[in-house]
Image 1 (cartoon, rainbow, N blue to C red):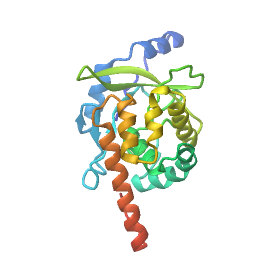
Image 2 (image 1 turned 180 degrees about the horizontal axis):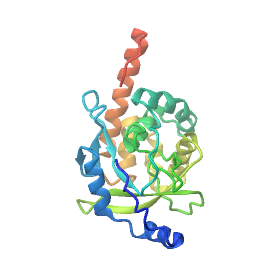
Image 3 (image 1 turned 90 degrees about the vertical axis):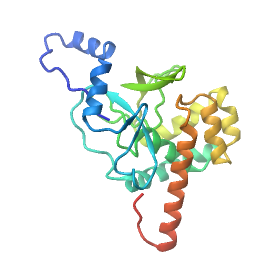
Image 4 (image 1 turned 45 degrees about the vertical axis):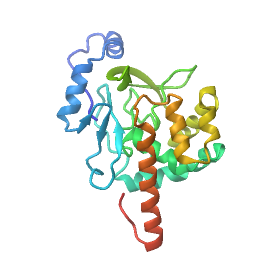
Length: 239
């Protein structure tokens, strides 16, 4: 994940610049910047280098408009999981799904917290699930370039995503999003079966990547195995 370097010379007309930036993002430059930053690209999905040897976890790749460099929200996968699990529990309980599944989905969407989208002022969007600002959304937004599978091919698209005031709000909005869309009824009915839950989520069209469900399941299983090992040994184990 890499940002696009802004053209600081273009300051004569702030309003015009903002409109141009929003409506005419240079996709090719964004992709080139991402590659230059060293991401191991595989279309929409890149392997997080910190976890390649320990987990076959993939992250959804999005490229954003230029913002001031920010401090990483999480030092490692352990910190991401330790932060997210407590926040996911209340939201998960609303539909009866294992919170580990929601955290695994968040890990997949954000690369273990490494690529959480930012708002236009540089602050975090707290968007853990890539939910777009559609369906009557009235809240703040974050704009990014995302990759989607269309007709069997991957294409780059510019889209607006929902922004929240906290990660807990992101978990709850995911649950509300599923509950308020009829196409996810089969997903909700499978909440007590984690693997079927993510399969139904993919089948309903939540994500365009054909391997979305299997990747979430793989991450969730890995999380469970490390948690069980740590509990049994009484030691801290890095994911």
